[in-house]
Length: 148
Image (cartoon, rainbow, N blue to C red; front, side):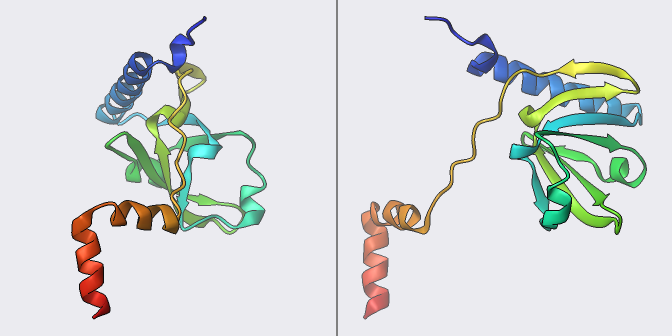
């Protein structure tokens, strides 16, 4: 059996730390840069119009300069920044898990190459959430009291 070393927890931890330290270093030098990200793992708030989303391929390049660079920050394994999209410069906050950053560029030079994949988002349905709540006897008591 062959192990995919790029998807092991150890490698993922190593890459996440490398991406975080590299971006922190670029911030400390006030150096603008670009990132290439896996679009499946990116969240936009507010959501982008379908007409803009349709223009994205599987990976997307973000140039972090000017206002976008000034708003960029990292917290708890995620990279955030504000950007404008499309002809109307539709504003949205972009949230990217660090492991969804596939490359970091400084000018024309790729300075980070990441082959690890972020964990897939697990969709939780209302039914599953309710089942999880009801598994705790204390929560059942509260629900019964509310019905009275």
